[in-house]
Length: 293
Image 1 (cartoon, rainbow, N blue to C red):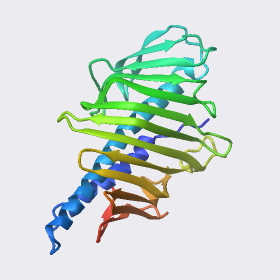
Image 2 (image 1 turned 120 degrees about the vertical axis):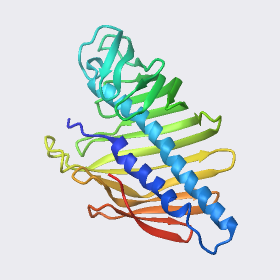
Image 3 (image 1 turned 135 degrees about the horizontal axis):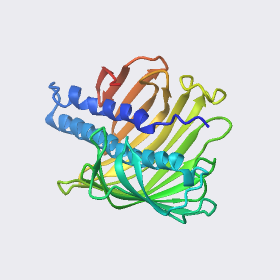
């Protein structure tokens, strides 16, 4: 099966685009009342925070996929040792591994990925603690499920909690995965706590009939999320599926909607053309922006 599935890359574009709202709107001055500007800035902050939190759970999702599609014991190989070291250079070297049971025939398995006291990858992301993954069968198999929990786990000193359930949705029609997060909670170094829940589906829409050609692949992302801290309740919904063509460095189509304490913001990525344009709307403020790669 063709394996080009980098949700982090797809979602990082969304996260950076949402973050770009701050650049335009946070310092914008007009004749609106101060309360309106406060409301706008609260919406902007919630949008940015949701993108950042989602990126952390996307990272756990990506680590799980990387491990389960490369480690021989979990993709149909014949690994025998229950403990080892995973030298995935993109993730950083010296990561501890435990697989129980160690034989490849028996499922479910419990896989522990241990980043110890801290391991920094090539992108400057520092992971600490353990991801504990329970896999019900060979994970590259359609219908396979992995349940991820977090043991004293953090990313860039943000503590991560909750349960993440990942399912392989691949079929003859294309490659795909879904995940859900329940009882999510992030604790920041400042002591701030945010609760989080969400779901994502990523499905291949085109390119399944050419398994050795990557550039004709097109993926669509759908889902929703909610977060809550001491002052904000926010809900994010992909109103129209986000379309990512592998041949294009940008999300080219789709709409994301954000509701913060009943106040709306949105990002419209266009009609499918491969360009770096999107339209950001916060309240009554609208601007076309350029998306980062």
